[in-house]
Amino acid sequence: MACILKRKTIVVIGFAVAFLVVIIARLTNEVNFPLMLSCFGQSSVQWMPFSYTQKRHLRAHYGYLNVKNQEPLQLECDLCAIISNSGQMTEQKVGSEIDQASCIWRMNNAPTKGYEEDVGKRTTIRVVSHTSVPLLLKNADYFFKETNSTIYVIWGPFRNMRKDGSGIVYNMLKKTVDSYPEAKIYVTTEKRMSYCDEIFKKETGKDRIQSGSYLSTGWFTLILAMDACYRIHVYGMINDTYCKSEGFRKVPYHYYEPGRSECDEYFLHENAPYGGHRFITEKKVFAEWSKKHTITFTHPNWTLS
Ligand SMILES: *[C@@H]1O[C@H](CO)[C@@H](O)[C@H](O)[C@H]1NC(C)=O
Ligand SMILES: *[C@@H]1O[C@H](CO)[C@@H](O)[C@H](O)[C@H]1NC(C)=O
Ligand SMILES: *[C@@H]1O[C@H](CO)[C@@H](O)[C@H](O)[C@H]1NC(C)=O
Image (cartoon, rainbow, N blue to C red; front, top):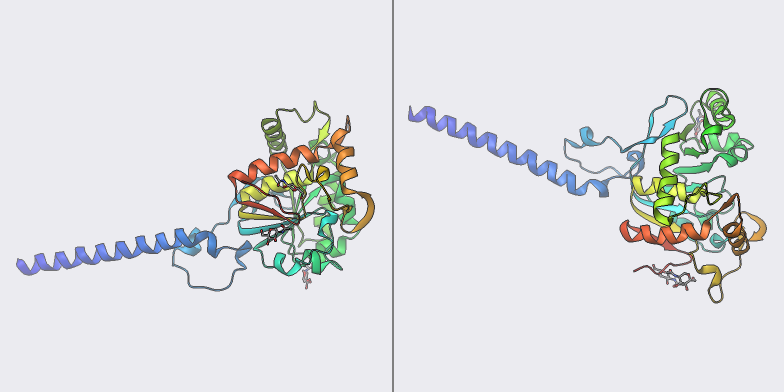
C-alpha cells in the first residue's frame, strides 16, 4: 500500500515539474517575443522554446488584402525604420543605420539605387498611393521582379479600387500580379479607408471630405506601422513648425528629384481650398501619436516630451 502511494506521489511530482517547465518555457517565450522577431522570421537563428513555432503566427492585418488570393497582410516587426521621401534625406548618411532595422518602410516610388548611403538599400514594405501606381509600373521589372521580396500596400479611394472591373487602379494591379506572380501586392479595404478618415476627424475635429483635403501616404503609412511595429524610427520628416523655425534647411520636396522646395509645397497644400494634403496638420497629429506609441523622429530631430 505504502509502495503504491509513493509511486503515486512520484508521478504527481513528476507531472508538477513537467507542468512548471512548460509554464516557464511559455513565459520566457512571452517575454522575449518582441525581441526575437524581425520581419517574416528573417531573424538570426537562436534557441527558441518548443511552443514558439506554434505561436508564431505573424500579426494579421485584415484591412489590407492580397490582390492575388485576398489573404490579409501578415506583418510584425520589432524596430521599423520609416524613410521619408523628403529632400531632408540628402547628405544624412544614415543608410547603414537604416539597413539594420527589422523592417524598412518606404513610400511610393522613392528610389534606393544611387542613394544607398543616405537612405539605405533594403525595403521591406512600400506604402503606395493609387496615384503613384503608374510610376511603379513604368519600372515594373525593378519593383516586382528584381525586388520581389518587398511588400506593396496600395491605398486609394473605393472608386479606383473596386474589384468589379471598373476600378482602374485595381485592374492595373490585377494585371501586374498576372505578369509577376511573385509580386506581393495588397490593397487597402474600403472599411480601412473609412477608418483612416475617421481617425483624421477624431484627431483634428475636421471632416476630411468637408475640408476638401486628401490624406497623405505618410498618414496611411504611420497608421499601419503603429499596428505592425513595436518601435518606429522616422527619418527625414519635418515637424509642424519646421518651416517657420529659424534657419530651416531649404531642400527639395523629394530627395530624388529637383523641384519646388519642401516648405513651399507644404504651405501650398495646407492652404489649398480643395484637393490638398494637410501635411502640417498631420504632423501635429503624429507628434501626439508619438506620446502613446514608441515613435522617434530624427533628421531633423523632433523634441517630444
Ligand atoms: C525574385 O528576386 C530574386 C532576387 O532578385 C530573383 O533571383 C528571382 O528570380 C526573382 N523571382 C522571380 C519569380 O522573379
Ligand atoms: C538628434 O538626436 C540624436 C539622438 O537622438 C543626437 O545624437 C543628435 O545629436 C541630434 N541632432 C541634433 C542636430 O540635435
Ligand atoms: C520642430 O523643428 C524645429 C526645427 O528643427 C525645432 O526647432 C523644434 O524644436 C521642433 N519642435 C518640436 C516640438 O519637435
